[in-house]
Image 1 (tube, rainbow, N blue to C red):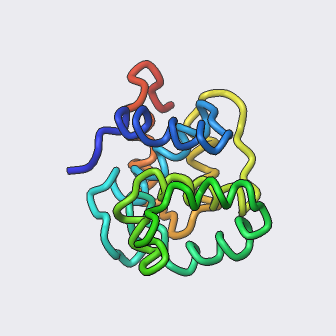
Image 2 (cartoon, helix red, strand yellow):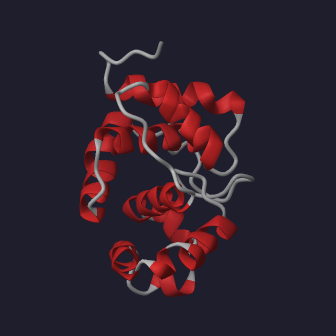
Length: 161
């Protein structure tokens, strides 16, 4: 049993994106859909074939987003690092992806930014789902339904077409 999509968005995704200075409705919906598709909104948080944590981020991608994106954006890197545990991050940085929802959310958003994601206009789940499937590691067609389930869990009046 995973986390309620509405509560994940309200208590984790939105505050994290606001802290990073990049909140929008579509960014929030994109990350909620990503968490749903990648881990079933937290059905599995440990090491899986796709990665770890609610966004199922693998160790290699985690390192690459730091080395190839955040390292060149010191203000953003400082904010993201500020979300991580003071000591544990230095010893087991990948563990933060499983145990720290705000940090994992910031890294998931950084993965999209690093890969040049452009949020589509409007509030339609189809283009957001396509963005996830095209840019996020280990996206799979058989999990696309999960992406849309998060959407309907967030806003009952926004039904997928």
